[in-house]
Image 1 (cartoon, rainbow over the protein chains, first blue to last red):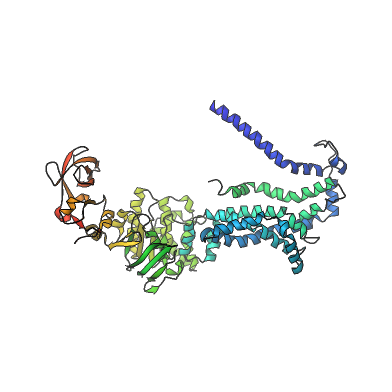
Image 2 (cartoon, rainbow over the protein chains, first blue to last red):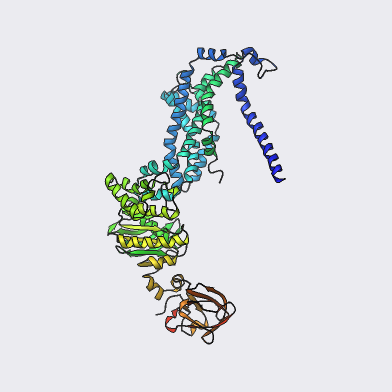
Length: 276
Length: 334
């Protein structure tokens, strides 16, 4: 009997999980479906889900009208660049917070996190003006810098949680063995933290890839990543839902694929330290 | 060479002084054991010598040269940790090679030393395994291997055997003692286990709350404990410490008699009591005796098999020349 009850419960949980999963995924699915409709079908009411004339003309038009690959390349450079730069800064920072904490380390960590709660628009004008004055507007370098700065708190926090799990005695042993601080971080800490660093890297590539506020406001044509490419299809006067959907699908496809193949790593990274 | 001198060394954590000014000299080639109850500062003292903690005052000298401000790597000491602290992402070979790699030693010399250490520690078949694939005893051997290849001025051991099971612990204890005889290098060994201290040490340092209570050879400490703390700490089972009228008869505040220095008789003796628990080990028999008219339960160690059991009435006589006398401060009266 006990077994039957637990099986019934299992089925219930599975169904609930599927419903929640589909609800979350539905907007993406709808975007993908819409991208294969004509503009007329895209706005028809009631909308059709499966039974319409599937077409790829939106993709052709979008590829003709915009330079998808330049935007794609900009996205790659900005997301990878900001993540790698962030890791280079965050690894030593998280090391010091995890292994040689000072009196106010916890406060510094909280303060760093609190900057994430600030509405970005609050600092848009000063940053815009600074960027204009130093010539960083519409440059990939400028975006790498700004995305590094906004994601740094998350990178430091994630690495900090990971590093906390590494026994301090192992680092002390390396110090006794003659390792300098640099050797200690390169030969001992980093290799031991590889799974943590990998999931931090993945998550931050995704966050930087999807970041739309700063990338839209600080770029024009040259450095515009895929977010700007999507936005260029949402004009105030036109209802180009199908083309917008095609552009969105093309913009999210790379990151969707990356996320799919790395989901185990991502889940482990995000729940690390939480389940103990 | 490995002569280590501590000169008025102190350590504070914030406002708490865990090591009050402390002087100690460890001679070259000596096997010194720091022993004491948990929280007595013995591990802190070892970490101060290692350089893993900074001293708050005083000076540490290694072979006469000031070492107080040297980083751990520059002190020429090797340490074996309680948790082994092996590098989990490296093979046994790379673990052992790590300190030599850091020192920039030529590859062929590294290889020679690894092979020698592996042979000495029975690790030859495991050199390409990761630490995670080894048993506790093997891991501890790797940690020792990593320490010996550097040919350090002294070895520091921080409770290295406490993660091992009892049988393995006895075996490793002997291996470490033999290693000391073979290498003839200074070793400083921290433990809370007085049996390890008694069996391994040339010199025992008994610590309590950061203070050195007594320094001496194992038998000196056993025969002439300087105070009641050392008397109670060294020796197993513990020395019986008796206060009150019985002590006054010996013109002392407290007297101490070791369990093995009390004779048991079924017919006559100084104290009469009833056996609470009798532990028959074969080689020895331990009795815990109540109702002697003294405040304390007495522990008696009788050699061999003795046919007395729970509830039996016994007579106990302390051996007159083996009674230790202590004053009101707990200090030994000569």
